Image (cartoon, rainbow, N blue to C red; front, side, top):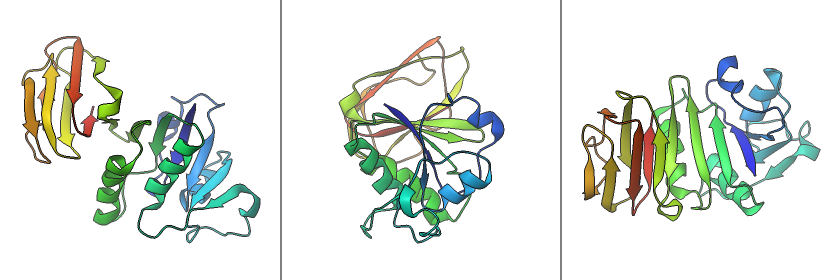
Length: 199
């Protein structure tokens, strides 16, 4: 099952939202629910600690996730995984404070391995690759720019079909994977840790 999570950052553009089918359920991550509603979208439920929304207004369409040791996004991802969702698109994640921006990336590392997660940015898409998913394969035009970042320690990362390939090499959180280019129309990436792949 697929779902959309709308966070409390800068609103996605109309063009970004047009890629989604109308029947995909939209959840608000705390204050993101108000932003989605004010932008004219139907929010079926609010998830989070509910400190940034009017709890009375959302009373019958909210689930409080009070754990203070995790961000609202991390808790929302775990909640949807527990309900059987396996494919999540996240919007409203651009902008905000540096801590919130980095926190969004950290939530990708915390999220259950059963989830296929895509963060939709104004100028691109981040795909979380978990080792439980195996190898990821992408079709792209030759010369497409992409970046790969390790969100956890990786002992073996393999990238094929790129200008700078890797063959079971270690990768930590660094700039090593920044600004790579596809040299084939078929790109394959695999790792024994968690990666963020940005197109």
